[in-house]
Length: 141
Image 1 (cartoon, rainbow, N blue to C red):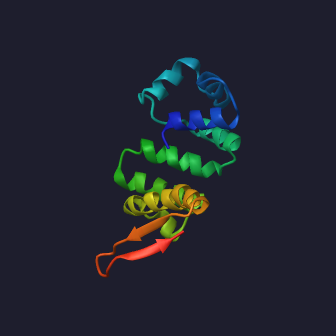
Image 2: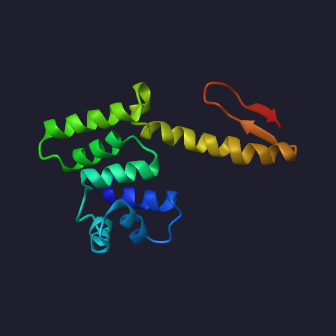
Image 3: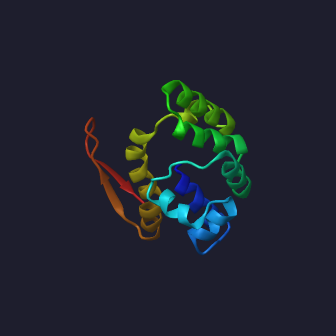
């Protein structure tokens, strides 16, 4: 998570009207907020991570490890902090898998099930399905 994303998460969770108020709660100066926003300051220090984690109800080590991984100078150090972040997040197994390909399949299916199907149930509609392997099928909802 980028440092500015953490500021925005605190802003949202605490229902604050400005980034500056959220940053002040974390211990970030007003002038530093624009640096985080523009990506010129990429990480929070350990104390800021602890405060942000407590405000967001996250494990402190998760936020610290995430920010340390972002500032790591070598691959081995970055991999260590990333591994620690994953372990402290409680995510395991397939939950860590990149699901970009799955999203392309399931987003249209999710939309169909939740938006189209309910409206079709209200009005009796006939849908023609034409799978490649078999002939045309008729479905009445």
